Image 1 (cartoon, rainbow, N blue to C red):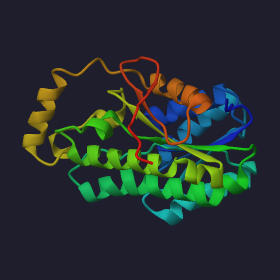
Image 2 (cartoon, rainbow, N blue to C red; image 1 turned 180 degrees about the vertical axis):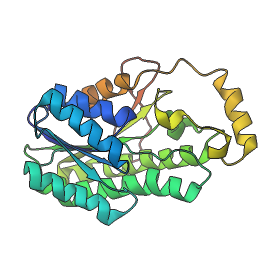
Image 3 (cartoon, one colour; image 1 turned 90 degrees about the vertical axis):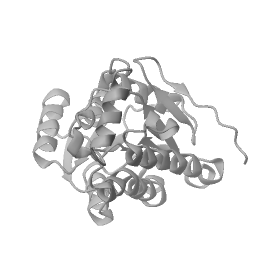
Length: 260
């Protein structure tokens, strides 16, 4: 069973929402150090200040970066290993709000996750991990599994995250890298990303679809439901596995029919 205690982590989109509570959950579980990487500098610095106040000076550092820019993203990896001298867990969590600029949406949600996964798996985790294995957690969504009519670009990007995680999480890659790749699919969760209006979608018709869907939506689970589940999944999840975290219930693994 993989343990977080004594490890070093990097999390994208860690300045708010699910990312911020995952960072806190990790430190509560004994993480040695965490890098918060986010495009929002003000919020990121505030989160790091709060984490260092609660868990001790130097436990958290902030890197201001756009994950769709590979060079900026890699600077976060470099700063992490320069500061903590190891890296064991990478959480690709950052997500773009809205779909009106769908090219940017894909660049953040999918390309950004590809950037983080490849940098972690092929360049940093095998070299800097402090134990026999390291872990990448890619935050996807139920929309990535089932689609979502109001936000098709979001659903497509998150479906890509699942396919990426399953492909790179197979034994053929794990056996050579000793890096697990796992996808986590939260259901309806209270985050600022979910606070979207008509101007954020592909058009007014999509907002009408969203309003219709929300009439039947479950009560949003707190972000802490996801953070606690991520810690549990890190402990027991196999590489290439996909997990659902929904309705404030314990995580459960998605079963696929694998052809390989």
